[in-house]
Image (tube, rainbow, N blue to C red; front, top):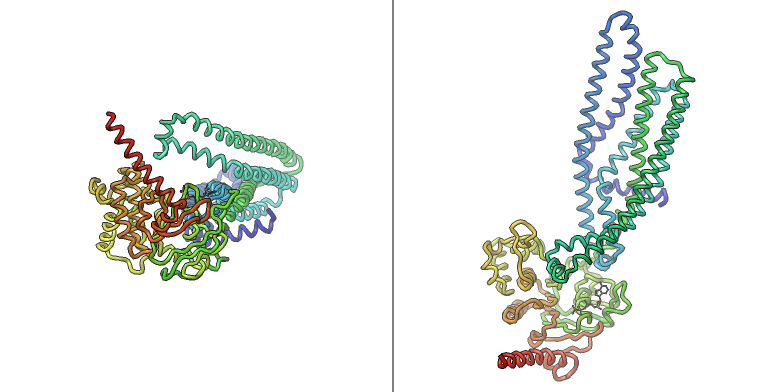
Length: 611
Ligand SMILES: Nc1ncnc2c1ncn2[C@@H]1O[C@H](COP(=O)(O)OP(=O)(O)OP(=O)(O)O)[C@@H](O)[C@H]1O
């Protein structure tokens, strides 16, 4: 990293932290300024005590001596109090700035383009940043303040000790310089290792988390794969440990080397003192204490330079993540506000390829979804249905071709304005550790122009529960909609897969948006509930534009249009009757499904007769 870039990073980071500059921070600076003078005051007092000591002993008059000793004790007390106060402020500011930066990071991550979040490289950058982020808050400012403070302390100290032999000063400077150089080399290696271990560390964390992941623990026991997972985790851990061990070894040898050089130079320093200087008792006391303090201050200076170098090494990982492209980024022209879908959503030659894939997940898709139309998208696993919907929702925007909402390209709309009007149930929906009510209502009220009164919210909530066929099982819960979900948190209860799916549907209905996308809305639902759900779904969606992705073809008979996908392309499109008459892939799938149910019924009947 060039020095110019380093300075730019520092300036930008200080600007980022500036809104959080507070009285506490200014107090910290003032206390640090006081710290410049206290050690020096002690030096002066020591010299004075040394100077009056012989006269006091000779004359038997200890009054001045006692006053000076009292002042020195007071200064010591003040210094202790100062350090304690600085420490307390330090802890408070460190936690405040950490919280501030992490909030910034999370806000950023909530806006980053989804395809970027599907890259391993992005995850490595994020985990490296999580490791160092707290150092970029208050420690960054503190080290800068400490650096200035120690330099000033050193200058004042050197002024007070201006009569000391130049050779001593030169040795102290050389010792400090050796420290700085050695540390600089170490920090670079440290950052390289942090980067190298971020991926194995993420994987190891994933594997160790499996043993308590409630979705996976049962499978681990039943397939008896605990040993396999343990061995994978262990391999990763050994790799991480080895790398960290190498780093630790390097650090220890480096510091030992520095210590040896320091002691040798100190030996020469004392030789100079003995052979080249003459003291009074006062100056002897000043020099002996002064050298100690000078060494301490020089070490503080080296420490703050070391910390500044360390932080400089961490800064790129912050900017790497904070510069990830956002959905509605500054460069994009997505400033159009979406109000309503009056005409249609239209796709023209839309193609999409995942970054590490060899083939296109979508290939030249052309279709339209009219306002208030009900559309079902069907097709084999991996045919591209979910990818298509993610493009239409603007979650992926690096597609080729165009997607128009009422003749305006999706890329020109602000994503947020589009999302206010869209409700979804995705295949992987959130199961938040909140109450059941909160899991459904989330915070959609923020989207509404006027915040509805509580009873309106209640009615909306109960309507959503009813249409999603959730009211029955919720009635059986002891605390109803106030029940906390997720048993790994206190008082939380768990729901079955199908019940969770109904909650997901209720969430989509509760938002009551004009456009609704449902990806596999009934995959976990039992057949009796499915019938009720379909009825509720059609009722809820009657005045809305709706797209349903499904493998259960029953609902296709009730929609206006069926889109059949295969290998990323649309191969058929039409109503149920049209596609059945056409006798193509849809007809084949539908017949297979109905025959399967029929055959299964016959097999079961035969089995029963046999018994
Ligand atoms: N993040 C990804 N990176 C690389 N390839 C992906 C990614 N997500 C999906 N794919 C691939 O894209 C293709 C389309 O996947 P998609 O999820 O859209 O299919 P689908 O029709 O929704 O499947 P299903 O019915 O099983 O849900 C598949 O071949 C899949 O392997």
